[in-house]
View 1: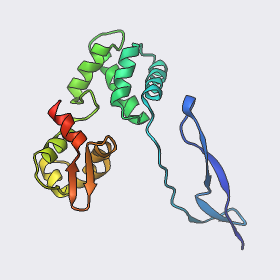
View 2 (view 1 turned 90 degrees about the horizontal axis):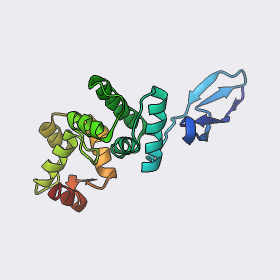
View 3 (view 1 turned 120 degrees about the vertical axis):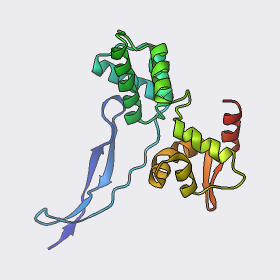
Length: 193
């Protein structure tokens, strides 16, 4: 039997920012259409910018039928790291806070209160990420994943896959062959925090 490979378009994001990406069929198929073996699909996405992130906040607020001010939408977007699932999660937490305080609109003051309760600062860093930065700042040598895990109480996997990703992307730290190091950008940030 002959094996053929096909290509198809996959919608990556819905709504205003939707785009189709042509990819190889994740499975090769025989003549009868049966799956023979698969490819590994790897997707790499750039984060959305502030304007796009703000549009995502407003679109989801409308979908949730939650009134929100322009400033509050920007506040949420600025902490959302350009990642829609985080942006939407933050909007939902602000919405929960709005209802718990018997408010009728998400305002900038309400978002500030929500993020304070969540332990997220104006740049979008949480307490554990800040602890990692402070630990690196106070170290005179590169630190390994296990050391950061002990200091933070988080698993090495969580630090590597979830926490340090944003710190690296925002230029606060680097991963070198000998361990993690804070950058000058990270030092400046902590010194003026």
